[in-house]
Image (tube, rainbow, N blue to C red; front, side):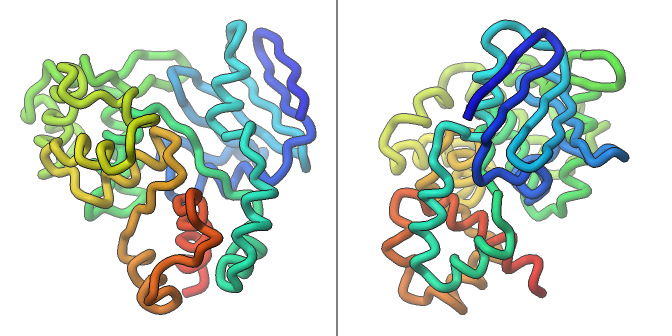
Length: 273
């Protein structure tokens, strides 16, 4: 892989095993939308960008500073050899089917606070409604980036608010959980930075101290926000997969990358109904 950078464009070439539409729109992130020209617009890490792909070339347009190319390399996990990971996963026949049906899905390495907050919002919710609540959260409490884009509000900003302040979000029972999470993160009671490198069971225990964060939300926060590809979120689809295909547990080839396997299986199973 090679990268070229200037103040308005970042170009990654010779990128293997990455499909931008699949990765941005497979249920792991909620701030991306497709433009009329097939590119994707969104905001991540306080940057509003448009991303397009032509075969193994990824072009990111926005406003950049020196070093921003690494932010996007990390976001798409470009330093991981996904081709090798997928070849190993394909030792299992079901995973082989899922990967060949939807090649190029990568786990996004999102901002850890945004991922935690977004998956708190996701509870008992569908994707269009999740996207609406997240968008209203950013519009009301994020930084105005211009052109109708807003950053994701920090835990510190939200920690000073009340449940009543969040009424415009129309987030229902989730409002009190958002506030509790923001207060615990902003106050240092939950250290999100530590979660990417500590023992995963310790990380899980840390997260479930937040009101409203159970096993599924904790696993999502770890997988999508902390780069813990050994995390394994279980929702209704994954529970069905496990019951029907893996009653004795996941195959050995998934060890250490259970979260990557989960994303392929989740997207495949949800789309073959």
